[in-house]
Length: 209
Image 1 (tube, rainbow, N blue to C red):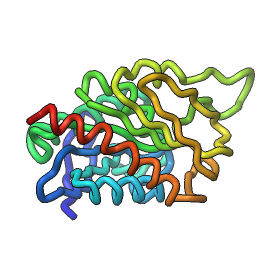
Image 2 (image 1 turned 180 degrees about the vertical axis):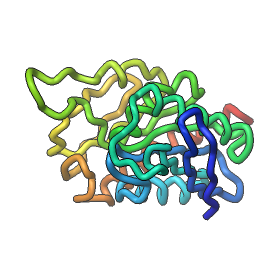
Image 3 (image 1 turned 90 degrees about the vertical axis):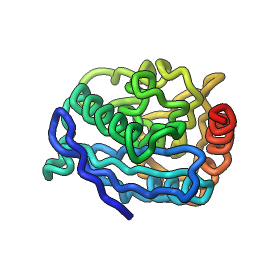
Image 4 (image 1 turned 60 degrees about the vertical axis):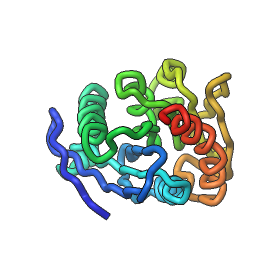
């Protein structure tokens, strides 16, 4: 599995690349705020995508590469993500329809940048609809999801303390057993991704031909 170091405006990002032999599309996933690319739901999604003929890239944000656990500000995360996707689309994933996504924080980044990145679909694993409770009522992040105009899948634990996003005509929400970690039933996570991916990867591959 090749590991690439890609320069971004905020330091190097690491990309763990799983290339398919004859890929129909590419899935690029980002990690959660305090975790890495080996999170169980990311592994499950990666395995499903590879089994369906997609190349997969798992992206470690610069703050993680630098050894910091606290995430960078949103604008830095988005800029680094776009820099990585631009490089991948120019080289390793050239010509492939791009499905962007990630878990938790990574899902938020993918939603905010979907349009500028040219993503044909977005995969959100454990989207944190509500921020952690501190003082006063939490402000919903639904606007980040609602700004995505391409087909979107949200896989959410039925006990996720960060809330449950509502479905929309272009947004499918699948509830699986578990909390925000999505560790309780990775087979259910894999099943949801496996059912949805062909509806976006197959269509975009056919359109490209």
